[in-house]
Image (cartoon, rainbow, N blue to C red):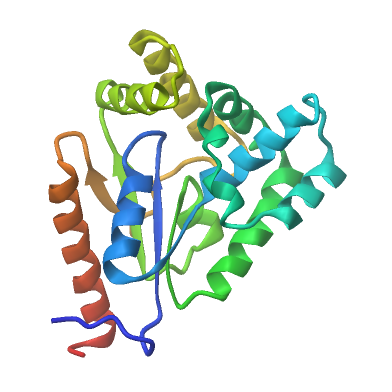
Length: 221
């Protein structure tokens, strides 16, 4: 039995495309093993939301100001998950100064956390290249669209499954083809296909994987 205690320092990078299950997985691991959790996607969504509130106007100075104002509590805003915010976040994520500002936030968060799970698209490759465990989540486009549609319905957003699927395909294409910090599978990442996994199955699989990784690093505690 592995006991997670204050002596242990273990950091997990969880990457994957939109709606692949990485956020759910990250939260499950963090809650079960009492680790801190950060979704990098919410950082870009937060900047996008503030940009929309600023009449769609933004520049380096504006983004730096927004980045410095971010708190974990502010990242719980439901407005971050609207289609408009999602669309704009993928656009501003291509800006070098946006990535630089938010990278700083993430690095500081990771440094202050001994036990942490950070999920996104460039965590294992750029943000936390020396993570103790790197996970890469995959899922079929059809299943991802169903999951995202459910999220939109919970937000009372009226949108079709076909439109959601089309948007996901476009987002995945943009994430993998962009020049700055593209979505890639690092050589030492563990692939996790969530297409046919229930929440409980995913939790069991991941907790076992994490505990085995901690055991490999620290031995029997």
